[in-house]
Image (tube, rainbow, N blue to C red; front, side, top):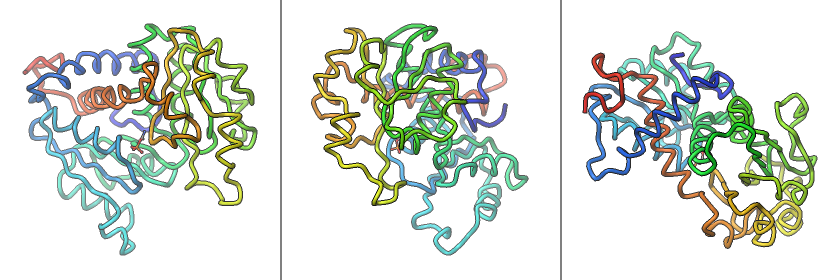
Amino acid sequence: SSHLLSAADLDRDDALRILDTAEELLSVAQRPIKKLPTLRGRTVVNLFFEDSTRTRISFEAAAKRLSADVINFSAKGSSVSKGESLKDTALTLQAMGADAVVIRHPASGAPHRLATSRWMSGAVVNAGDGMHEHPTQALLDAFTMCRHLGDLEGKSITIVGDVLHSRVARSNALLLHTLGADVTLVAPPTLLPVGVETWPVAHSYDLDANLEKADAVMMLRVQRERMNASYFPSAREYSRRFGLDTARMNRMPEHAIVMHPGPMNRGMEITADVADSPRSVIVEQVTNGVAVRMAVLYLLLGGAADADSPEGNA
Ligand code: CP
C-alpha cells in the first residue's frame, strides 16, 4: 500500500517487514554518522493539527536520517487559524512537491480523507487521528516488545486505563492481535469504548487480576482534554484502582516490562518510581520510534532502484 492509515491495513507479513527493517535501521539511528542517502531529493511534510512532542520530533529525525528534506507545519501559527480547509492546505503541499505527508489531526478519519482525495499525490502516514488510530505508535510498541520478549505469538499484553479516548490502544489491539499476542484491556467501565466486545481482545475492570500473567503492561494517559470536566475521575480514586505503583509492579513476572506511550501523568496512571524503574522501557520506546518511522518512510517512499536493503546504497 502507498499509505499507512491504520494498523488494520497491515497483515502479519507487512508488520514483520516493517519491524525487521526497523531492526536494521536501529543501528544506523545509533551510529555517530547517522545519515543514509536513501531518500535524498524527497520531501517529507510533517502536518500537525494537534500537539505532539515524540511523534513529530521522531518523524523529523527519521526523515533527516534518510536524507529527505523535511518541512514542519503546525496548524498553530498557520493559515488554518484563518479558516483554511484541509483541502486547500493539501493543495498547497502538493504545489510544493511533498512526497509524503505525516498527518496528526484531532478529527478521526482526516488522514483517510487526505489519502483518498485527489488533492495531493504523496504517501499519507497517520500520526494520530482523534480517538481513532496511531499505527506507528503500535509498530514502535510491538518493536520494543519483540526486543524484550522475542516472538509475540502467545504473549500476554495488558493495556490499562483510558482506552475510550486512546488511538494508541486501538492500534495496539489490532496490531498485537495480528502478531498473535493475547491482549487484555483493563479500564473502568466508563473508559471502555462501546462495542469493545467486537475487538479481537479480552477486557476486564480489574487491574490486580491481570498483573501476574502479563509479559508487558502498557499504561495509558488519562486524556483530560477529551473529557467533559465533570466526568474527569479524581486522581486519588483513579490511581488507587487503575494506577501502576511499585507494589503492583512487583506482582508482575520478573521478565515483564512496563510501557507508556507518553506523555505521562506521573502520579495518576503511573507513579514516578515505576516510570523511572529499570523495568520501564518508556524512554526506549522513544528511541525505537525513530527506527520504526525510518522503516515506514523507507518502505513507503522506496530507496534507490539499485538498493534492496535500506543500507544498500550507503
Ligand atoms: N506517544 C505520542 O504520540 O506522543 P506525542 O503526542 O508527544 O507525539
